[in-house]
Length: 395
Ligand code: UD1
Ligand code: MG
Image 1 (cartoon, rainbow, N blue to C red):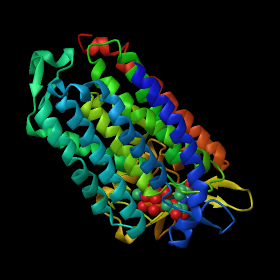
Image 2 (cartoon, rainbow, N blue to C red):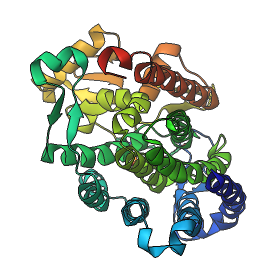
Image 3 (cartoon, helix red, strand yellow):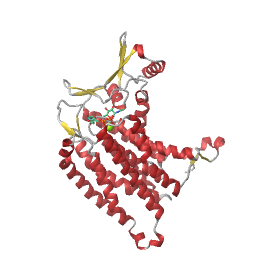
Image 4 (tube, rainbow, N blue to C red):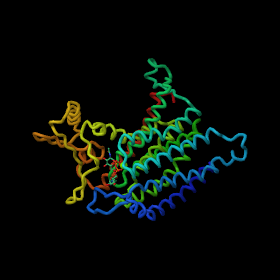
């Protein structure tokens, strides 16, 4: 318990250091050509990009400094040193560190989408190796209604490792594609981080308390450094967080989910990102044209955002694309108009869907609404995880 209190003190210091460093380092990023233009503003001011590297580095350094305290007692008695737990922490840090490096490379080099999928898979390898050595548990507990068909548990063997690798790919990219308005990437990550921390605190009384302590040791420093970044990224953004931040965040959530054995619960906290991903699939796989930016369109006259649009040329439209447009229009999930030659429809993101359903609105209002939705989804996740779980599992 005392180690958590020291960790919190470390994290308060980390918050202030991050908060101080971000404005001080901003001009270095602009000088290095790492900047973007805020596409939802009139001003063409250069906004430094990839500042997630600052919060990410301080997040990692905080954990590095905390290692002697977390393992303090055990360091005295080398005979009983918990090598397994130490290896877990080091593998977690290595995976997050890899993602920080690869995310920064992406911000500098603007990598293609295929690499964005490959990089998190590579970065999750240290984690999977430690999982194999320490646990190698590849069994899923079958929900009660399905037990008559599959038995109490199913061992899916190697597929479990593929699942964990894909979890890392999903978590990193899912945050990155629910982005484009001030404060949204960081805001959603903060809500997910807080949800995980609350879940860990609930579970500290259970028999898996060690795993949840482990998770807290990673999530609390993440939360504090991300809060400082949030302050600078909130509307009107003075810094952009870059893909570095999205990748570090996604990998941090995947790491705690995998090593603390609550990956399904982590996925429940990703409900808005799952909805956004599923809705985006036709554009991500280029069944429907996908422009470089799908973020909402800013109207300078009204100072409001409206859904951005993509154009399908009717002569090039394939059968699958026609069916998708038909089905989504039937469920009123698309806003489209067409003429003889083309169909103009909204870009398929959750952000644009909110604008279609609730009408044009200011950027702050849109971010706040999406973050409220994220919080509501967390509430749903807790209902599924606690009261409803007893219908599906022996809890
Ligand atoms: C992802 C999205 C893209 C979206 C972009 C916005 C997919 C497949 N890709 O691309 O549709 O437009 O994120 O981040 O869904 N920006 C703002 N305001 C913000 C944040 C970002 O205007 O609050 C703009 C800036 O010009 C900034 C740029 O977005 O430079 C960053 O885009 P980047 O993160 O490189 O885009 P992707 O992650 O590739
Ligand atoms: Mg991005």
